[in-house]
Length: 322
Image (cartoon, rainbow, N blue to C red; front, side, top):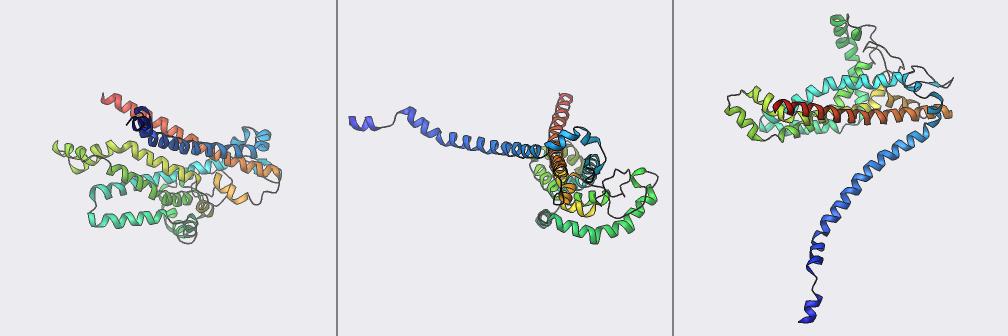
């Protein structure tokens, strides 16, 4: 009996063994999170290392110069920065209202029998390769936009600089529309999951106070889910900033800044995709690497700014409620 008692594990050892799965899972989770951070740092380090020649020669002037001339090896990324932000903003203006409205319809209004078919179509849209959207944009969307929508916009709003000037078809506006179609599934899917997570108690309380269906959606549902919807918009913005192939095919690839949305443009991702294989000089290659570094930094800054803005809005809203 004594030997059996001596072989039995102590309570401390049994407690340690019981917590071993917790420790293992915690270590695995920390390793996974650290791997993601390490990958971002590694990508940034590689881009910085490849762009040191351009950074040393142009400095901050690279970000504010509009001249891109591989022959004389003078490079400035301002037209590409402008094109990236403009096309992304156009895409968000179109995709966010449509995505949130679609998500509201699926969660609050649609009959049960049609919800799953619509969700399936949205998921299928998300799986379409970007080059397919580019081909569709070239052969279907751009001719229709050039002959109908752009003509109507210039006739009705031509007094605005955004809708003035000649119509080429390939343009900043066409690129924004294509990107909007591409980010619509992710905004819709994320918004739908956020709206589904709103407790039914929120809706029931609003109905009990005499609210109409629209008031329930506006106050109880959207008010509760606004933070998640904002996150869905940021996810869509991140996809829009980095979109390459479809934008390259429909934006016109003209490194000039124009006030008109009908004019061709260029983006950071497009210039890398278009010129990387043709870069024959070390300076040209370094400038393209710096363009990639600017795109990475822009994406990080946009996400950080969105988090700060979200916390500010949420904090101010909480203070008003209090």
